[in-house]
Image (cartoon, rainbow, N blue to C red; front, top):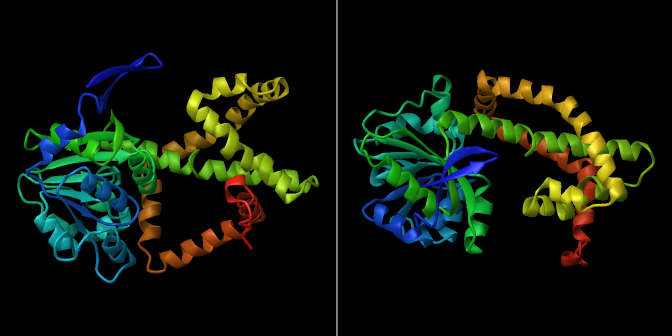
Length: 353
């Protein structure tokens, strides 16, 4: 484990140098890793584990698109692909990667398969942290660990195939066997993590829920929509408004920030842009910080988790979700974006009608 300073604060970080994939294989050589759920995180983690030489099986409901996808990805029914309960019975490490709502529904079944010495693995701290709402309380004689990749399962898989890695958080909630640390580290490396950052279940889910509702998705969409609509109201064309709001940010500036940091990006843009950005960022900070404080409070108090559980458990959840996504898709902002994306040089002549 490396002790690395982040802005003057020391944190424990596990790297591939000290814990290579060969060591992960050795730790997991006698384990059967059952990936339960083949939706968002399941495919990326299962395929990476498989390609890293780990004994992995998949549990998924039959007669579903996800079951068919697992078959297409090379998992064989009756050999490496099973119904959820059977996979849970066969696995010694159970990667619980169903959606938060589905985890609640399946828990009474899964709980019966959590025999002493098994390992229950999460990629999200939701079920454990909000157990007063989810009723997910593991028995005391099993290990309970977490590896949370900082990105989608699609990104995890893509970066793995490219020979890269995605940073992940890791945590140990219960160490019944005395081997939880080695197992969670091995799993973190084997699913394709570049680095593993130490956390706990509560901090992981708090930061995750704030991030999703904030700068990662919710806040950025709000900023995009507000600027786009102001530009359109002042007579700018849809393409100009989209290019200045989204395209330049995602295609030019954010890659520079990712590579070198915001300070470098500021230093390498025009003096006019520098002056404006330096003058205005604190105004946006003052305007949005109270919203983030309200958001964090809502996450901490369990309001956001309860909203998710209540909403996602409804029988017509998908219909309502599709209506809300359709509203985004049909907005002038993203309709303009659809055309702009098709005109990027690497997609020339692919105009999306």
